[in-house]
Image (tube, rainbow, N blue to C red; front, top):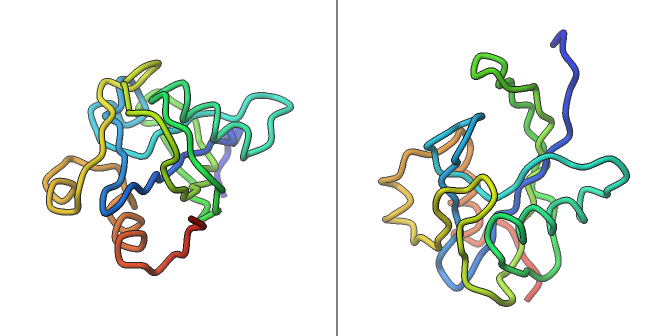
Length: 140
């Protein structure tokens, strides 16, 4: 059991054709690593509202229906951050080109070969493989 306050957070794995959007984290936790765009859930927000807000703040991209993929418990106290309960959503790209903003240093779509060469947060590659391999159905 973790003796810490658990902070709800969200991220969105955005699929466009055979590419997935990733951002390079600009600050802790996971500074310098590539991950799905996301962040903390604000008081009074639903998980879905937080996911859309964070995606727009970090990248300027809009998506279709959000599909919950998994929940991850991430202990970032060693980096001076919190313990997060991260809900990861999958969604299809609808409009906008990714532009890094907020706490993202870079935002772009990457194909699998590119992703495999990037420094990634834990579980990112596993989720990418599920989405690109068709193991998860996302509404069109």
